[in-house]
Image 1 (tube, rainbow, N blue to C red):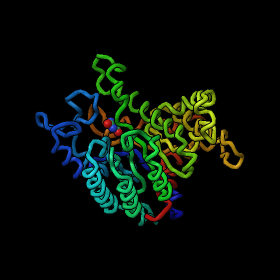
Image 2 (cartoon, rainbow, N blue to C red):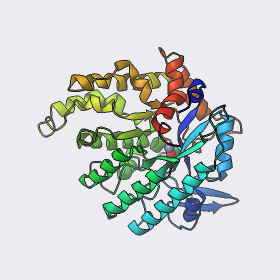
Image 3 (tube, rainbow, N blue to C red):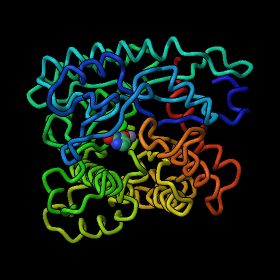
Length: 387
Ligand code: URA
Ligand code: ZN
């Protein structure tokens, strides 16, 4: 990284989505969810199992790169690490998932490689767009097919990681058949962006009741709980003990995991099946994860950082203990664009401003901590290698 890049405060958005034109066209060709359909004079998107059949409005902000750049300009975002939005390829048969993953990764590389450079002296080699690739994570896919795509993504210089749902190849993140996948992702240094899609799944019907609450319950509660459960299962399966260098970035600040990590540790230590399984106290693994700073409140922002930092004290050996105050180094600004647009009008988006203000409002954070979460941490995590 050039020195000048470090000198200027850059705003880097690591949680921002698109449906690439090839993917959007594919959704338009489908008659069942996930699909894009036309209603009146507007296109609409239907992707969630428990969402009203009317879905949500969808438009060029989802697939047009100029709209992404315009949004970035409106919010002074210098760099975005773009990922395909849910439900990725989860619903496809293995052959189709493999073909589409490979094609979409090439499309995303092109989308990023041909983007403008960051306008700043000395930054001629830094683009405004980088990406998370897609893996063909579907039931019955041969593991070699997944490993092949990890190799492809590693060879595409603007792709810095992969986005992954919580089901992986159908059985969740504690599935032993994923071992070679974790191994390959870790060896390649690719960041795994873990993102929800299913909410509470079949449990949602009973949990959410009958009142029409729009998308609020599934997005505010279902999504974060899904991430919480998936990550807990990964921890319980010892994935971090076997792959300590794996870089996993949790959407929506890890859901309820920071709040529940001490309870998790206590439950583990009182459970005869699990108590001797892991090398460390559960809280230590929280300090190994990365968290987006998408939680909309300064108190939540500070709390998550405190819990991440605190976790390093729970390493079982002295030399694995980190700095308790360094939790903020694992938190990274995000927007969730193009989701959560303002209901009325144009201009800057409330959903974006709330997260920026939350980062700026954390008690005890000085300029260095804020700058790190707004962009410095992302530069370290994603753009240290060849660009
Ligand atoms: N709704 C979704 O379906 N996905 C997101 O990432 C955000 C909101
Ligand atoms: Zn998202």
